[in-house]
Image 1 (cartoon, helix red, strand yellow):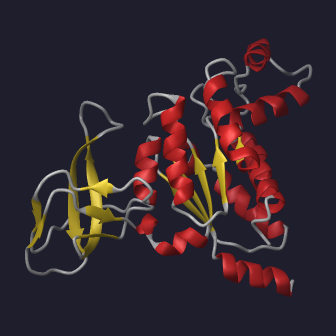
Image 2 (cartoon, one colour):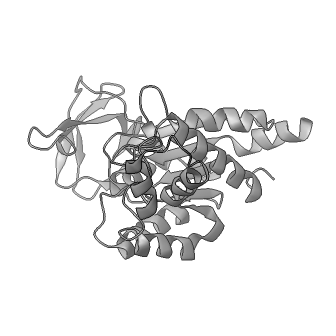
Length: 274
């Protein structure tokens, strides 16, 4: 017990980065189960949910800090701007030395895009000029997270080719101190994901979890008389069946539990708890 407490004190926690699957439903996300699974092993580690609904992989890495969020054009921070909601991994942030909260206005044309950004100062002060190219120092880019166990669940959006997604993921790995897990795409099927799964597995080896294949294999082993014909067809194509995920690859409670168990086992076998 004493040794495990020392490990917990040194590791600080687990940071789980991602989009809709990471933030989860109201009633389910894998992070809650992961915390309990680690605790059952004797490691009472904080497990932080850094998920934001509908984000692309680039958005996620922007919050995390490995692909910097940059001010696009010259602007200024006024004496005070009163508005804002928190965004895990972004806030509190700092722009040109001014601390505060950054939030976005959702586009009326596309709810997954941001039409404008606003900044709320932590403390009122003099007007500050912000030149184009200034990097937003997000909460997620704080040096403390480098020593966490970092987990990222990749998204379908934010990249055009498997190679581009691989390059983005490599930037994530380069920004931390070696204890990480990459969770691959949960949507799609065996054919559509073949190239991207192959690239990620070859590059990251045991640190890569193919979430789609993991849950399809689980479903194969769990098939029985209650398995619907529709789910049998999905399983045959390498698609996660409807009892484990919806058509967009968003996991059910059972799906979250299966993934969490696998992530927990990875954390242990990869030596992250040593």
